[in-house]
Image (tube, rainbow over all chains, first blue to last red; front, side, top):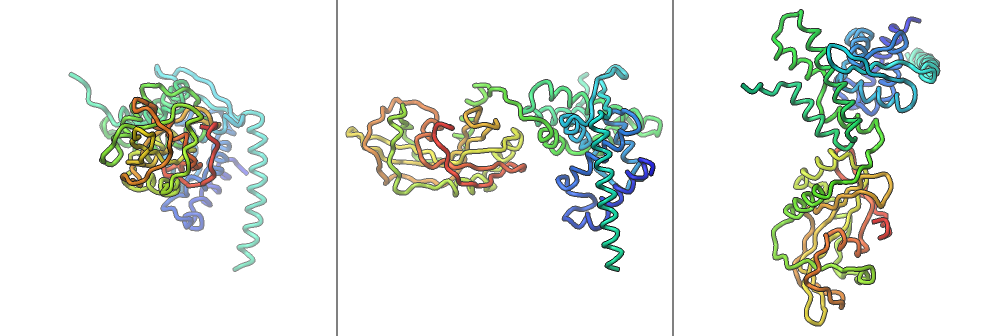
Length: 134
Length: 254
């Protein structure tokens, strides 16, 4: 499956009424969302290195605007992933100002693969349950 | 003519303030990233027509509120362990003192050494629990936001006593109030702020102890506090309020 399709699937699920019913209006509670944001950021970085603003665009395009999140929350996710060694970053100069570019590390690629597998397993189990209950 | 502060300037200024606990390097990195983000957003919208001011407003709105982003950024990074500037501590102590309810306060009496720490249990001792509740009251919203800004996750809750000493050394409590100490490091024994919060107050009538303390003793409230047995651990929630845990801590951890 193409990365952007997986990303869209994930975003649609997160914006679904089931998740929205956890007490959030419009989008998920940040705490509940945290692990998913990290996965989404890793997925968005899979195709190429990017800076924060470009990543936000990637995430928005990947979710068809279904999943709305304060753009600023992508930076804590990036910093967290960097601390975990899943992404690495460096400064470049752009239009006279500093810009931080992020890229997946080997560990990040592996983590994304693991999360991808977990996600499929989860989705398969959930689908089986939901289909069985109708 | 001086240029008016733009929405972007305001957001960056709020972030700079809220990210203070991170330390200079991490703060600068975050601010540079956010600035680049916002200016990129403004530049991207240029073709679509709206004024610069409208584009800036939109970029800031989409970015999200500075306080939330700062909190998430602080959570994403290790706590900064710099020492607290003494002047700042002084200012906090002063503000904290002013936050106390008005009352007849005599000189503050405090033990000067460890031997003086053996103050007997006070008969009408104020427990730490109501002090935690007091911190969480709306009257202390200022301190919640302060704890939140600091990113502090631990606190000590206790009671501060003030009193007068007779010539025979009899110590009479004239006042007591809650003290909350914010813990700024992962381990005890490091940087803390001692702050007073408006809390349960008692005026006069209770005597305890027989040791004379010189009226000239000028020790900070938290030193006084160390001598009591009523310190308890509290967790500072993300919104700055306290979760009372209640496990007392040894005085050396102070």
